[in-house]
Length: 400
Image (cartoon, rainbow, N blue to C red):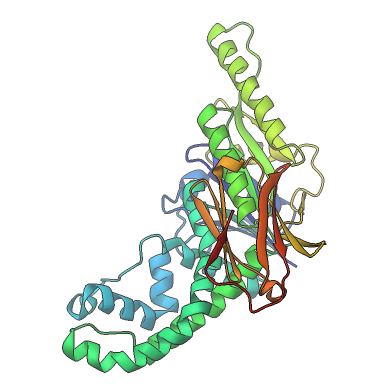
């Protein structure tokens, strides 16, 4: 069984370098390793001082790199769907212009994830290390497979019929060209790939997320939120890397002051992420470019570590337990407070909103007809009670 490790963090914390160090050390262990960048600001070529692009580039005996282009993936893998979307949103004349392609805003990197899933299924690499975009974009990216799968399951069968019926009318009367049968078939195939992608990314024995941060106030706060949101979407976090840690500097007042400031945030990070493997990475005096520099970080990164590439921390999330008269859903949300939380139940869908993130959780069929009771945070765990009752269920929403 292969392994996927996703590295993410606030922009500018050095996540690309940490991802590169992961990949280099993995290759040094004799494992065929692929380092993938899904960040549109690709910089793997800058780090390794070579040309890296949309084709797998060999960097060493067992090390390969790839910078994904989501527009090219959409054009290559889903050509009919791409043409249909362009005609629908930009018009037929624009769609026929060479090089024009419509991409729904925010959906670009979804196709990068689909490409990573295919690479994993092909089995050519034992480990895939993913250098993801900054945390805000990564969270938007990682929630898309589940969100789109939900919409596809609810609306695609009806939409497919409506498109077939309305297509002749829309083109003649409204000058709008709806997707044809080939395009709808491709969209259906995309749905199946989304289902498989979601299962892969949330398989905690295969895919985990590792956070990269620095001991600074803004970065610490964003890292805490990211950890909470990753738990909301049921992703397994199995490591935290604190980059650019200054050594004591008693003979330099300026550096000594910054060292003291960092120590406060280091204590907070160790407290917040207690129970997770944490590695502090020193602040190097030179740029981390070239294989020799990355090898130095890899050595510091793995010093004294055993089973560095295995799943180092696995916590069950989204569990159901039997209670008197019903069931209780338990969902880990470390750092969430009651003031940040909103929970509402619509038939067999549970909406959990934390801060500015919303997840719609499909409930098991056994809860059909149940009434949602209290919802509260207990020691970083959201507990939602469902009381079973006779009858035909409920209409509308129940909120807490």
